[in-house]
Length: 501
Image (tube, rainbow, N blue to C red; front, side, top):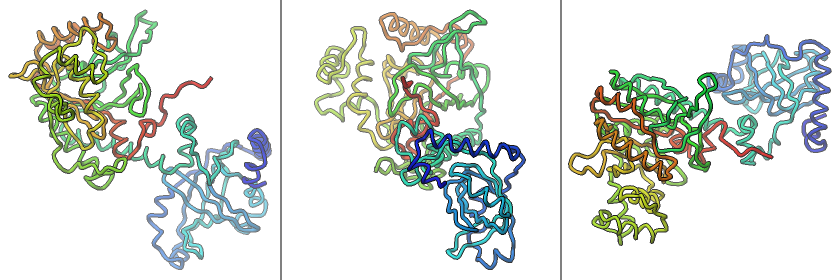
């Protein structure tokens, strides 16, 4: 029975029953799940090395290959058939003849299904249409697929099913496979870039007895052996800066963070972050390094410093714009001027007109941040460093010497998304202690995302943190940009989803 008949005329349970019957028959003949076949060649390798060769040349050379993969196409005919295998690199066609493998083996071969995993050995040839093909002398069924693949013409278009059953998505959607291959390339290039710049890769704990390093709501868990509540880290920042105190000058970490917040096209509660710290550098140095990194990534991934995202050409080959948060607010709303941003009551009035609900304990800095998010953030398209954030919303950043209400901090925005956050690190232990106290007061007033007071980190600063620049780059959002993917779920192999009832 052909696959088309199975899918079109039988229920899923009937298909499963039929294929289990075939598996049972196979079990009787020997090892149903053999593991002694060894693949020597990937599809992409075969095509790249031999696609350009002429038919006669291949016949003379008798190039032997060993391939394996999932059956994704089949044309079963009388005494000769074609199937197409898909492996991690691509697809390759196999030509199977009864007189080559024997009558009994050929009859068994015709009973195999789409989705089965097969290994074959043979010589390369070209069909009359010029398609590079493996002329099979030996073929084996390695794994029986009990469930049918998604229908080949329709593919797998249901977004929720693609996210929940990513294995099916990867199986049938080449675009999805390409995205995750590019994600791997991006991460690899980032590692190469930083090690090439003299940074050392480190690892810091995921489980902490106290959250810190970012204003975010943490996940809590229980450490039974210690009879203690623990937190999944929201950021590795404080531990990484402890390492700078210890004497490492240039370090980076590529790892997961966890924030107990909502799920959207921009957010996933578990995400990948790059953080780097650079002693004897400031936020200007970090911005310059970021420009170089993103330029190199664009060239590596897209082959150009200009990439397209959602129909917009993004330029990574030129210096990124640098604008203060205050001036961008004024540019976005001509009715707002710089002087108004210094008066708390005026800011409250502007926020009210902007439909921003202002808490009683908010100062000028918090309102300015909220105005920026409401009026400016989504309008930014080209790579832009938004600089000089209020100290009130930047508890770990160094103050500007001549403007102590502001900090030497930047956020990189591209297409309305925050891609990076960095600053000259606050290394004054007394100032840091005061800012931690302000965070504690905010927490006591109901701000669940405010930081705890980390006494040991203050002790570390009292030992001396050299002037340092630090930065975090969201890898998931960066991959979205580099692959022109509209949702963060498109670049996560297993995105967080609501549990089905």
